[in-house]
Image (tube, rainbow, N blue to C red; front, side, top):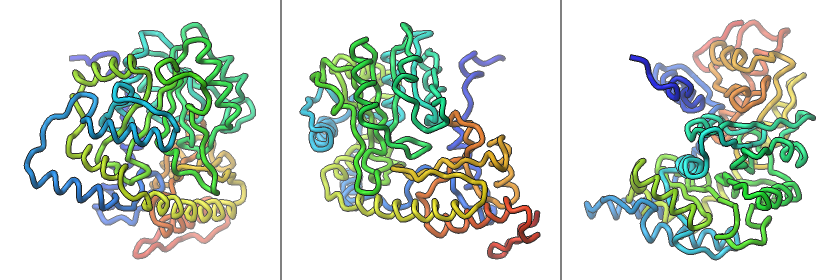
Length: 402
């Protein structure tokens, strides 16, 4: 029996697929180095763990309202005031099973069949398929100069009467690029004048390096939240290293949030009450773990970029945020899928092909694991790409041969 056209058109998330493959290799005893991961290796804040344990001991783990518990929504309100300088109310916020669900529900609430969703290249791997799941048409915008940020004119040129949403992610996964403030202001203002929604995937907004901060969309509009066309998507996964808790949220105009909550009520129901309790504790508790994570990532970023710089022909811009580096490997192979497969097969290093992010010839390298993994992974890559190097490379008990 044939499946739906939608099912046939949507493939598995490549990053989750690679995570599963790396796990299988490690279980088999292979000395795999995972430079494709998307979750910090630090631990969740103890306040979150303690809150979860306390609730679990009560045995009262029940359904929550579709938009999240009142306490969770109040925590989102406090977070929005602290980090975005905006006072919002409960009708302006909702919790979801991760920021990914919040993005998906927002698209379902806004996009009709054949409506367009515009986003810069490179983009997070799920944006095109999430757009298709909502019935829309993905419109990736590539910078003519090959950089990681199209010009404002290039973004505007991609907007048509069918454009319903502009979807942004800054700091950007996979490039680590922090979008220019003037560019962001110009784009938000242009969209609001034309009743186009700007969705900001802000999941990495506190993981910015070198003492800098990312400009957020609420800095780019003078409108009140209910009159704006700005939607902020965020969550606890990255900043608090709470990926498995699956708690994200959305902040936006109350009529949109209500529509999203209605959809979510039928799609999945409210997010896990236990996870919400832990997320509240993380948001309201001491924030030292976020600073520690940011500092650790900055050290690893510096190490990765320095080591990559020792490989002749490889180009790697220093990421301004996130925990990814989007490196240009075109001097070695313009087919990123083939190159990533070669790295996995020959030296057991996991990377993510750049074509999945809209840019061929690049690989996304993650530095959210241990700095030892960063060093070992680049050591193996450097050996494999050096045609004049030694015929063998020793990694623990494993001997790699060309």
